[in-house]
Length: 605
Ligand code: ZN
Ligand code: ZN
Image 1 (cartoon, rainbow, N blue to C red):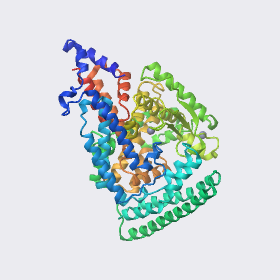
Image 2: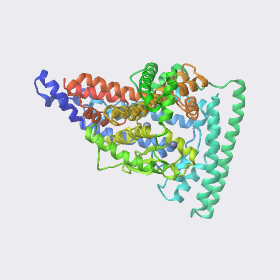
Image 3: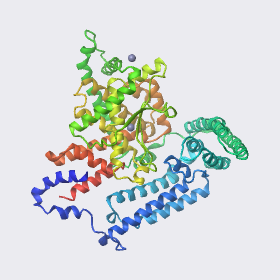
Image 4: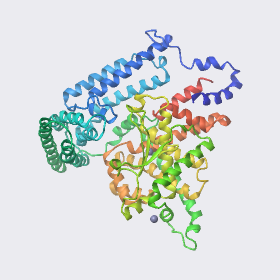
């Protein structure tokens, strides 16, 4: 894939450099023997680096058995790590050991793939040190302590016999009391918001232990003895969780009187978290400023479309004088155009194949037709989270099938179904399919899997992944999907406005002290959101930091980079080559892709 774009540039540079291309491509990187102190051959560092990566992962999962379960690594499923000083110490030693080892490798002596993996490993270690020593969420966010997640996964994932999974659960349960004891010692002055969340989520954990688990135990073929042990350990785990909830409630009363920690993390921590998490080449403040400008631009474009469409949908009716109100009125009116609920899944299926045809006809990006996306109604146990989502296999199960889960509307009550169908109306449905499937998340995933790397999929960059899907929405419309229909552009702008507003909301909340009222006014008044959606988003903004900016950040970096290359390459620019090469590096930060791509191109100049 990389070659195609290289060739395009070659044609351009040939004129000035007069040939001799082959050696230049080959000397893309300095020779390893020149730079490495150990005078290793290129292949030697790659071989030993592969071993280093494996041992890094093995040790990391041994230290983090619960996190391992989330990526499908079950070797340590019976171990519950206790968040105490001893574990801290072990993690610190691990961090140092990895940094020391990583320092022995030279970028220039590694393949491109390994070079990126090395950077990702270093970033992970540095971030984990920063979170521990500076951010200190473990001191003020009591919701980081919850034993239920991994227990639920062990119970509900069929990776070995039910009996063996119950044995793993039993072993974990014996440590729950120690776990919450250590948690209480870590917590100093929490925020009210995270304390409430912790109380709520740990109460949820109780239902797993009082209902789902006993039911599974009863239906298993464990011996009477084993069942007895499980029963006793479950009871003591329940007592430990109840004790933690009671302790938190008391703590809550205390901090409500004496002063809680502000959930707003402030400018310094925000900028640093932004740097760690997004790995952007810009500052959070720059992104925020850009988002504000973009908001005005989108409003302007929406008003122009509304002006033009008004007589078509409201003939003889005066347009509201407040322009944003006119936009909102039109969006509401258009939302009535949607599929019948019994046709929802079928319609989504059909649209996926239309999108594929369009992408192939317009030659926008490589499509792997040997692996068609399987569209299905969301399985019962996964329902209730989103209307449509890509269900991708984890890094330790990379060959499993990828599904496109679509929520069936048949079983919803009339009002609820109608509200979903209006939200995912005729036009928004198209944008949704582009974002989730083609050429959004699904296409990106297929391309990333062409050079499979556990490191890249474990430490995948959320801003790149979400940014790509948001970029795909705009790119498809630009290339003529929907034939420039103004209604579709209007709905696209509405979706895009949400992404931009997320960034503004997050920054203003954490850095500039935005209040709840101001936030709701922004989302409802200026981004056309429903009250329920806006209230949910406000809650999310109080509980998370930076994550809400990842969509717009990734999008704006990808879009800006594309325009930059277009400018640079002129007639030689090919959209398809750009897309293929951009995705070939895997799910890594956009700023890193840009650097590598420019390096790959620059080597020829
Ligand atoms: Zn309707
Ligand atoms: Zn997405």
